[in-house]
Every structure is written in structure tokens, then in C-alpha cells.
Length: 614
Image (cartoon, rainbow, N blue to C red; front, side, top):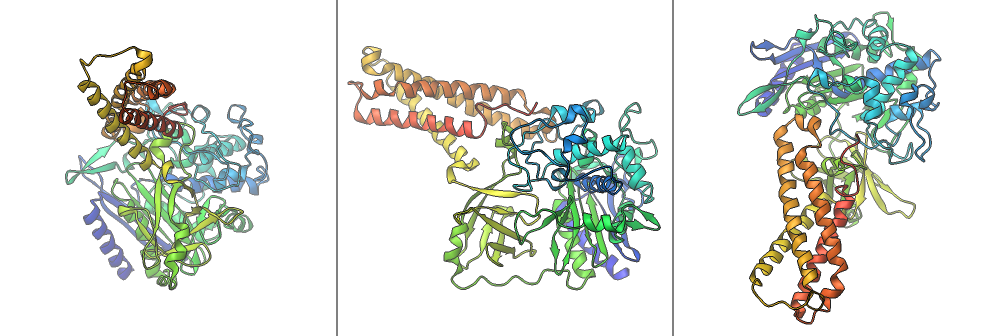
């Protein structure tokens, strides 16, 4: 105990000093009980309140989903829920999914993240005041994302899927989701400092009891060498996906139940057979990467496979990793926006110290001459976990470049996000840093079409260099420079004699000048819109789409219309007798660049798409 405590204390202290983290809570358990329970730093300011691992409530984020999965499996065990049945069979009429041309969504698809929903966060994911929190059914009906792929094509993480599953569970159980979780999981396990309720007005059925309200840690933003307490992040409108909060001590009990195969201290949460079924991987994006076991993620840690889940809000991060076969589990939570790295890296380090063979072996060297072969994987890739049908697509797309080093390593991403991988099987690559794998996907002709990430919750599709956000930024910069050039050239021609519009091409020139003005206005307002969203901080999620965003989109339509009209007038301009060949070529270049930008804006949903889901 002392050696483990000293080790964890040293690790956490190093992370807190380097990253500036206000508060941390850690629990380590094994088959015999709690091995370590620690609280570090501050849970609140003014007055200062230390973290107490027994009572301080940390936000669980998406670890909450694991409770929803277990609640669903309890109903399966009772014969009240069929995972292979259509979800609509168990949903109230106002939440039933429409026929959208894809195969029906089944209950298991909601657990596996394979229903095919696009992702969305702006405008709705978090609320920052009690009066912003919608009733669950109103939220799920109003902010329903579109399905953009067939079920079971890929697992792509979906908060909406699990929020909908939570309401499905509540509907089948005949009571609120919060009460069902309490009755079926929290109370039997003695988790008295865990809840899916939030500090809402007493009249709200999701309101937390008064005794719990003072126990929540604040969420902090690290700034200017100190911490700023941020508003509570409400998620009750999608409670099954992320509203959970718990102390480290209560999460220790939860992990011990998972190690115990569904039981703890005489309380049976899931029968052994049901727990065994739940623990089996039922979907995997590709061989060699992590799989999904009825919602839990299973990844290799040396020779052991985990049951795990991460969680995050804007100002809180948490991770729970259980190795059932080794009989150990680690939970860690932080309350500061700089804590993501600690949460990601601490559990593997603790597990590697506790359990022999729980660490990944050293990565091999690249095979001789592999650099030339690896070029088949080089290119641009875009994460499928994003919006597809709204302007949010431009704000939520994560793009990575895969490139090959001279030694034969693959490098995925850039800057601090760059990770180096080495070949570890056919189309499978292992991270040099932590041993986790990615697997490249191929089509029927054997062409590389994307890759499955190591966690198992998304894939990235291969795209051409012109289908990336960088290409859009480059095109915008080119059009901005050309527009300035157009206006400068027109200013220099002021006062020169002009012939008829039809013969001189003056009409087309006027359209290009107007388009240039519109494009420059669009760029200026678009930059201002992005800056204002950044300045809003966490409120940007709720405030979107802001007035500057709306004005920028209007200007984009004006610039696009003028550019199309200028393109229609190209034949007249190119026949103008008074124009030199050089001027005609410059005019052609400007119009083509503007039209190309219009097409890119259509691709990125700035044009011909709604701003948001609702």
C-alpha cells in the first residue's frame, strides 16, 4: 500500500505541477478490496475546499454510459428487452425513429454506436443554467441528428444513441431514468455518493437531493497561473449519455462489482451469465483494434483485455480501466480543463506497476525497406465522428495527415497530436508510445480507404487533399488575395474611357468587383465569428449559431451568387476586344478561383445546408 501510494502520489504531483490541475481523485482496487484511495488539490475556491476521495463528486462524463448499458442488460436478463429488436418497439411514440431509407435501428446498435448517426454538439450538448435544461424527450426530439450510414457499417461514437437508450430503458422500466439507475445499481451497491441527478430546481424530477449539492467539485479553467471556477455543466437532458457524478470511493465499489462479474458484497447487479455476455466484444471496426462489448470498450493491456470507458465535459475528465482477468481496476478524475493528459496516461502506468505483463512490450523496429511499402497508407484522413448535414461539419471535423518517415514509421497527425506507429501485422500498426493499434481499411479492390482507431469508437476515411479543412483555408486565402488584386486593378483604371458594356466586358468586370467586395466582407465577418466563438469559451456551445455566424453565411450566399453570375458572363469577357490577353487570363483565373471556393463551401455545408440540427 505504502509503495503504491508513494508511486501514485509522485505521478499525480508531477502531472499537476506540469499541467496546472486544480483537483484529482484516484481509486485503485483489486479482488480483495480497495488498494488506494486518494484526493489531491482543490474541489472548490472561496472558500478553499480540498478534494475528499470519499465524498467529493467528480463528473463522470461518458463513463455514465456504462451504467446505462448495465441497466439495459438488466432488462434483457428480466426478459423485458430484446437487443435484436427494433428500438422503436420500446420507445415512446414521440421518440420513435423515422424511416430514413436505412435499415431499422435495433437496440444493440444504440449500445454499439453502430446506428449510423452523425455527431453534433453545438447548440445543445451542455447547458450552463438550470433554465436551459430541456426535458429529456423534448431534447431528444428537437436535437435528433441524421443517420448518415447504414447500421453496423462502422462504430462511430454517438452521444445521442446512448441518451436515446437511456430513455428507452426508462420507458421499459416505467420510471425516470435517474430513479431506475438508483434502484437497480446505485442503491444495491451502496454508492451513496453517486448520482445521475444534477443541482436543478426542486420542482424538476431530476433534481439532486440537498445533501449532495455541496459535494460537487467545481470545474476549473486554468488561466494566468491560477484557476477560474466555471458554471456547472448540465447534461440532464441527455442523462444516460453523461450526467453521472461520483466520488472515487463509490467508483471503487463500481469497479469491484465489474471485477466480481456483476456482484459485490452479496448484491447481484447482473447474473454471471448476463455479465459474461455483456463482456463479450460484439462489434469491432477492424481486426487488431479495440472492440465494443455492449458499450464497454475492450483494449489490450499487455496480455490482458480491459473493460473501460473514458469521460469528459469541458472542464472535467475521467477514466475507468478494469482488467477483469487480472482482478484490478483504476479510476481517475480531474476537475480542470488541462487534465486530459493525466487521465489518459495515469491508468496504464498504475496497471503496469501493479500487474505483471499488463504493459505493452517494446515496439519492434520497422521491417527493412518498409518505408517504400508504407507509402500506400500516406494521405489525408477525416474522422467520421463529426457533423455531416449542417454547418457544424466545418467546426467539428478532425483531419489528420498520415506520412512515412525514412525509417519506415507511420506518423499520424501533427504537432502535439502526432503519434508514431510501426507495422505490427497486415495493415495493422502499433503505437511506439503506448502499444495501442490502428488498422487500415481496404475496399474490394484492395485500395486503402481509411483506418480504424485503436480505442474502437470511430474510423477515419481517406480523402483527397482538396477535401480537407486546410484546402478550404488555402482556397479562401487565394480568393482573398485575388479579390484584393481585382479591387486594386479596378482602382487603377478609374477615369479611363469605357466602351459599351456588351463589347468591353465591363458588365462581367463589375460583377467580379462586386464579388470581390462580397468575398472580402465574408472573410472579415467569418474571422470575427470564429474569434467571437472562441471568446465565448464554454458558452459557445450553447450560443451557436451566433449572430456573426449568421451574417457570415448570408455574405457567403451573396458572394457565391455574384461569383456564379460572373462565371455566366465569362464568354462576354473573354470576347472583349478592348481586353488584353493577360487581362482575360487574370479575369478567368479570378472567376475560376471564386467558383471553386463556392464548391468548397457547399462541400463544407456553409452553403445549401442548415446551420444546426434545430
